[in-house]
Length: 76
Image (tube, rainbow, N blue to C red; front, side):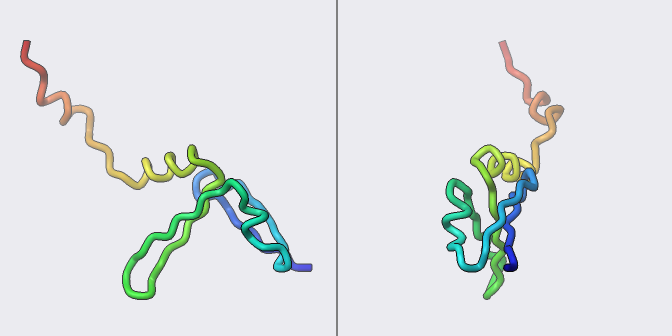
């Protein structure tokens, strides 16, 4: 019996399931994200927890350099 596998895109945790088993049973508590890239082009991502989703999202967003933020300074 061949098993299929989902992998968390943040921590690489894996969950296996058989084709006879509905994926929703194996992925209970997991999060799935679909990112539309264009016409008929969709990327799918799976995450084992909100923490992993947050970590992945933070890695996708460019960070503002601290030196830039400090350049505004606060006047007393």
